[in-house]
Image (cartoon, rainbow, N blue to C red; front, side, top):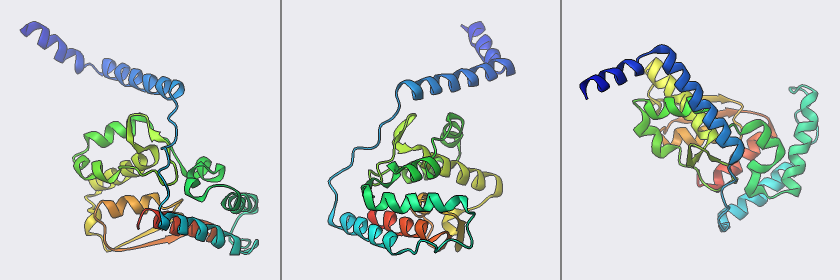
Length: 220
């Protein structure tokens, strides 16, 4: 038994075996992701607040002038912003993550390496409850843990890096400025991690509207 244990320890410390093990884990993850593509969270019955926020999102998007972002934005964005406004009018605002403009540019399925780093991080106890996903927006569950999403895993991974390598304490910060806030996922995460300071998002009118109303749907 002693010999077997020693052999096992030696094997686990072999750099080549470790690399092969990591590659195998990634391959298994990719196969699972391909064969069992997660479906969006089943939407719960909408609350009165969520319905109000959804209607406000449509109204806000409709009020934004077509050329409101003309000067600061690259011309290639004009069509994208127009499509985003169109989705707000024609698609379900509560399922905004499934809009093509949001799904393709603001929602990311974190690779397995980021998940492994996160659960081994000394701050995992802080992140565990903060990355619990909601059904608002109908995000797709993360394949390694269906209680969260790939987006929240990636956000938490970057914050864990900041905390571990720079000694940052999110909960004690006074101010955070985010350049381009997507649909507000990072804001939600740091609030759930205990951040109580001033959070500023610099973004285009369409995205600011999406952030305000999507966050209001979950009570933030």
